[in-house]
View: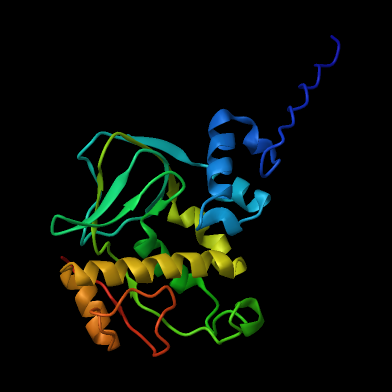
Length: 224
């Protein structure tokens, strides 16, 4: 018989990435939100294609504990709609809305393991200073609770691993958010966050800083 017809070409969309995977509505939606995200905005279109290739849409009803303090998380959530409250002992230390990330503490702990052993070259840092070790925690230092109905994109941290080595901006963004969360959690009474800072010789009574301390710090995994 006649040879089979070739499949029709995939339509092109004027969206970030332009990769073939970005033809679905889900993919286009996550690409648009990631492009404007403080954490994922540094990724190129092709990197976003790869990072979010197996993304899942998760829905959480009001009051659902999305992530629990003292437990490890192998995922990152990129909020699509709704509000997630980051809590310690019932106190709200921050809120996450559309375009924000939840799960940054565990994500940065993974990033620190995969970053180049000598740190990123100084010419890749805006302040031209050498990269120092920083505070990391293998477990969440706070609870994340849906304050209302929430829709979020779920990304496996393992899908981000290739970019921890190739994209220092992504690591710095996770680092800054993680350090701020640990500081805020310690001030609100998180035992694990306080011990992390005490071991590092950092006072958590000070205002949270986006830049990590310059002293070599330690990684601790604690419950509670």
